[in-house]
Length: 201
Image (tube, rainbow, N blue to C red; front, side):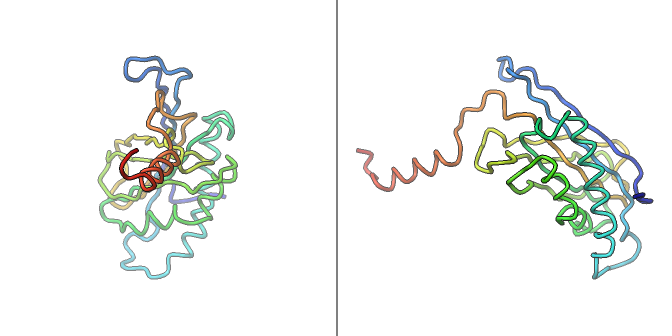
């Protein structure tokens, strides 16, 4: 299925070999794929019903970006953490970028391809060309696993133009190299212990 609005697809790939002066074993890979599209609602004034364009564009973008990202990772199993983002050009409503990523017609392609159980973390933002795209990640199976709270960050020098949207997916092959702050569950356990024993004895 073609998408006339699609101008280009950009990929980002980073291998973190060390952090804090210590080797990362194994190295952490952070990847991202972004589609730059002309905003289908640009120049039309306020549009109340966004659904026709969501139904037309979101599935195409969801499949395109998911396929590209999994090819980059090597397999869906290689992806441990995942997320999504939309960046709107300066003449676009934030709602326009949100419309293309906050729909099951977009996110379910990625979620199902990596057999995920958690929701996709996200950002929606607006800015000129070369604005940094930030894709927050979380573990695809466990939203409380803090080791996998990461952010894929990159920018596209000529996008978005004022009337364009950038839609992106991100992933990592693991958690932070030397994670040691514990998970959410440990905090809940400790807080419960503090309530039961406020004097600390």
